[in-house]
Length: 119
Image (cartoon, rainbow, N blue to C red; front, side, top):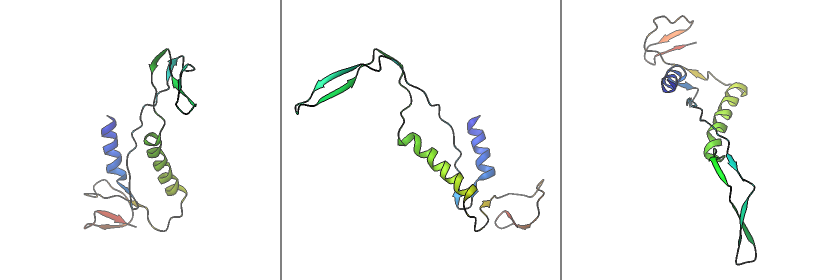
């Protein structure tokens, strides 16, 4: 069902200006669930320092890694939306193509060769 919604969104919103709209499919973000997350093994290093190695008693859910792979797509989508909503528009940022005008009620000039209505 989610894929069909994504397909429909891309059909309707295909492009905004020169940016191809990518439908954002949310991921399930999970919290880490563990007992003993405050326990560590101490490893003595050759240079006199120590390394603390996490050693929980039980991990029932490792959780979602919070890293660039998770956050960058969200940041990119937020930036694109903020720029489109609050940025200075210098032209028509909305482009949609149609295969026909049946059941379309708008004002403008039908450009059949490009499949769009020009206002």
